[in-house]
Image 1 (cartoon, rainbow, N blue to C red):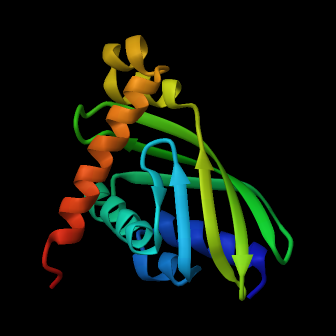
Image 2 (cartoon, helix red, strand yellow):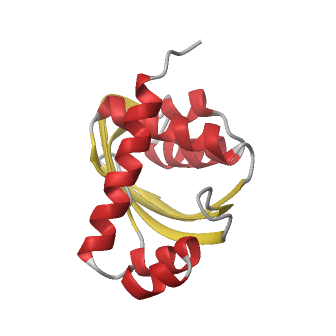
Length: 157
């Protein structure tokens, strides 16, 4: 499968909640990074996507566009529309994704987005007031990583 097809498969699978198909696009040594989680190793990356798909309970709409890729790197733009679980607020997150490939799979995935825009939608007035600060980004990362650790420690089955 070519790199464009890998990226398309990843987001198409995300859109229908097919976590196994999503994760099949990743190399065994994949890393992920974004403003909400920070840097994640391979196990954390897989668990993060599994957790997000499971927690969304189908209440997420994924759109993607502008896929561009060579044999070694690629990019895409995508949007996620969902309700933030802690507040119930509607969120439209516009994300730029960068990829690196190894052995035909994604080895590095970096998502960037406007944390202040996201926090204003997700957190309301607290996000509007503090969402642009490193303090709030660190607090969000601490919260998401605590949720991720708890998810990873649950018995699977």
